Length: 111
Image (tube, rainbow, N blue to C red; front, side, top):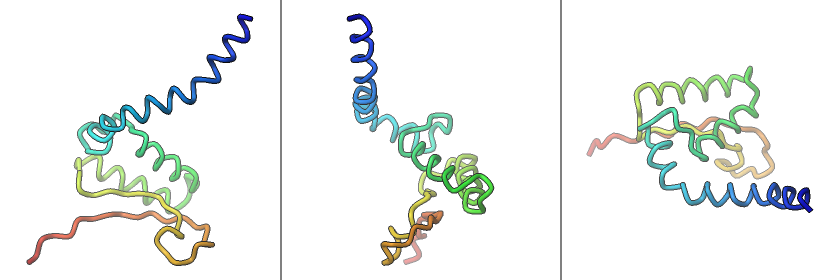
């Protein structure tokens, strides 16, 4: 019976962690994605890091991603973002399985 209780508890951990992640989304946005604290890794940033690692650490795209991310962290750029996405999300070819690094830069107000 004790073993059953422990197994049930362990089975509940993923759903409880998901609940914590969802309830802290606002804090993650404030601390993790805003450049205020580069030591806090929010869920979205962790997801980007994981996707970048899936490129392979010797991949030129991984190097490009880490260079952009380091630059943004060093200068606390809040209006610039970098992401690793499947090419199919930005092209019309849904069958393309390659990955790309996307850098989002704000457009200056020139008008």
